[in-house]
Image (cartoon, rainbow, N blue to C red; front, side, top):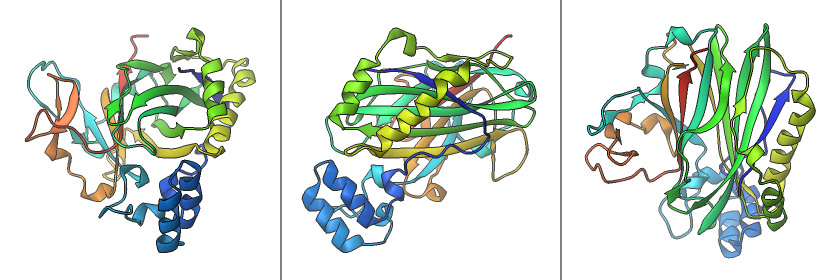
Length: 311
């Protein structure tokens, strides 16, 4: 079951949601672990971790944290390609050339992959996905949200490809900002709410125009309130959250805006991630190790694409 809601707020501020579990202390996270059925493990985490960050605590019985404990992300980029058979290189998002034709243009943003390698619990996950962007029109900036839920089996990816998120998002002269937040929904009442809101009208991407729409704020505040409420509810766990500011500068510490696909991988240490070890395999449509084209990425990740609209 899935639904989509839109939110526009009169602020340029970074959107704040309930913290993902990896950003909590071990003591705080242990309370959440008890809510989702890890009672014995929660006691061990609470005793051994205390005020340490949960992301730094090894999972009991393992020599490292679980993938959903991590808070950092590595960002890659796949350029448009005509290759249907040969592996395609992945470039670090800060190392690409900006596409200046996107300045003051309109773009389409689509969700291409949502990979659930390991989320809390197991089995089939109901994932609340919130994608935030900035729509820049008439010298003003609107914060816009696309919210959707996907049912995904542990170790697999959502059954989507090219799912429209924003259609006609207006890019400013400096670039565009994106933020993503995912919540693993386990609360039964919230699952019923999501099922109730399942409707074809909510399954389409958010279509934007080149002028402000005064009717939009009337229906949009509900979406952020709903996302925050679900993220804070017992048994629901925030898993991934990241921010991307894509611009046209040559700042080596930033990331550029261009047409292509952006990848955000939830990893333990982004500074140690090496994109040269990974490629996109067009034969199976997957991100794979360069030396094993039938392998997979042992982390949670998502991919979204950016394309310029003709008008």
